[in-house]
Amino acid sequence: MHNYGIRAATAEDLGGARAVMLDALYRDFGTGYVPEWHEDVVDLTGHYLTPRRHALLVAVDQQGVIAATAALDSRGPREPDWLVERYPSGETAQLRRVYVRPEHRRRGLARAMVNELVEFARADGGYRSIYLHAYRHSPGALDLWRALGKVVWEDDDGVVHFELI
Ligand SMILES: CC(C)(COP(=O)(O)OP(=O)(O)OC[C@H]1O[C@@H](n2cnc3c(N)ncnc32)[C@H](O)[C@@H]1OP(=O)(O)O)[C@@H](O)C(=O)NCCC(=O)NCCS
Image (tube, rainbow, N blue to C red):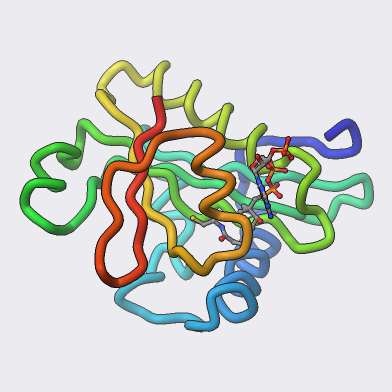
């Protein structure tokens, strides 16, 4: 962790942040870019930089290359109804796009960025919980979220829903 800087993304960081995200979508998840799931990746400014209650962090290595991303918005899950009621939009901080380039993994970057986002959510004052979902087959994801939070529900499509305390 000593060789990285973590900061709120600025306009200059967005190309590098988007590259990290797209590489994860293509190489880790195998879905590639799917417009109805990933439109925030195209409009990072509108989704994360402009809204006061949202955030996008980047981790930068010693060469200035963006090694990882982590984002937060105020949107709860879309379905099913019980999960939507438990984590309503506006009162729920959802962690999104927590992606670390493969050569920078297991160095504590995701943990450090998530800790910063948790602090951001607490400081907001309007969030009552921190939610996220992950895919069972994502490399390292379930291990990471089990280390940092608790499983709320595993659906039949291989999606695991978590809450962070
Ligand atoms: C999941 C991911 C973000 C983890 O990033 P990371 O920076 O390597 O994670 P950290 O080094 O902060 O790990 C924190 C803890 O999570 C757990 N963990 C993370 N990756 C793990 C792995 N591959 N195997 C086992 N445990 C793992 C460990 O408990 C770890 O603590 P430790 O290193 O002290 O044992 C990264 O592997 C990644 O980008 N994967 C592909 C994209 C993805 O699935 N993102 C999550 C979307 S929901």
